[in-house]
Image (cartoon, rainbow, N blue to C red):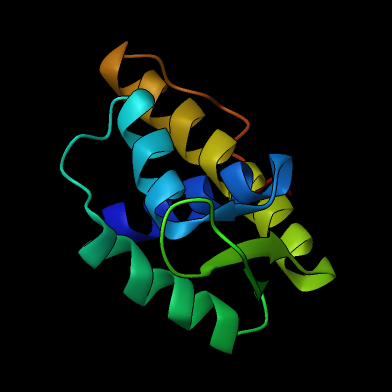
Length: 114
């Protein structure tokens, strides 16, 4: 489950600005995700690229070799929107459980009423 959440977070970060892998790791850490290294992030980025959610471009670096910068594709933007919908649904339901609140109009994951 956490892998899917991290993937959604990566999509959100990339949507804001074209970024390279190490920068993504730093951004995740700045948001409180301390246990994710480049070794965790790069396989996710490769899979996301294979699934055509992101594209990459090699660009010169001021310090060392060229860096691979990632940006969202239209498919990646759609996946991010779907992630946000699912996250809000999950967050609402978990909050209800934690607060011992039931909802008589139960919403399914696609926003329809059961």
